Length: 234
Image (cartoon, rainbow, N blue to C red):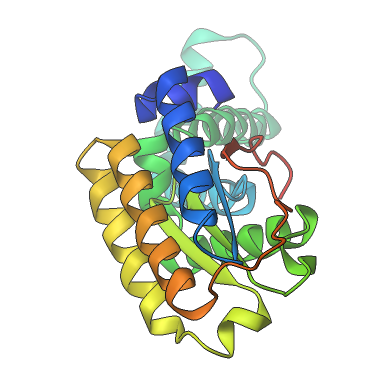
C-alpha cells in the first residue's frame, strides 16, 4: 500500500494533516513533553504466514487428489501419446506448483490475509515496528526524556503509545492503553482526523499535568502526522 493509498483510506486531506500538526503544536505549548505521531500501512510483510498457508493448502489438495491417481493416469493416456508412469509425478508437481503460486497471491488479499495471520504475530509485529520507529525518529533522546509516540498500524488495526523513561516514571502505562483503545475505536468509525486530534489532546493533557512547560522550551520533534513506508521485507 502506497502513502497515497493509505491517505485515501484514512480519508485525510492536506488540511487534516495541518489541523493535526496544529493540535500537536498547541498541546506542546502547555508542556515540556514532546508528542510524535506516525501511521504505517502495515508493520510487517507477513510473507512467512502467507507462504505457510499456501503450503498447507497445497498439501491438503495433494492428499485429496492423490487417491485419484489411477483415474488421472487413464485421463492422461486418453489425451497424450506415450504416457509413462513418471508423467503422473510430473502432473502432480505442476499441479501443486501452480496451486502454490495462485494460493500465495490469494492469501495476499488483505481480507484473506488478516484471517490467515495469527493475532499474536500481528501484535508482535506492531510492537516491534513501533519500538523501531521510536528509536529511529529520536523520540528516546529528547532533553528531558519526555517524548511519547502515538503509533498506528493500519492493516493490523492496532495502536501503540510509547513513552520515554522520564514519562514512564510519572504516568502509568494503563492511561496510555486507555487512550490507545479509544483511538483504535474512533479510527474504526471512519473519522481519522477527529480520532487523531482527540488522542493528541488527551496525551497532551496528561503531559501538561505531569510535565509543565518550561521557560525556554524548544521543539525537538516533528509536529505532524508521519506516514511511514510499507514494510516489504520484515
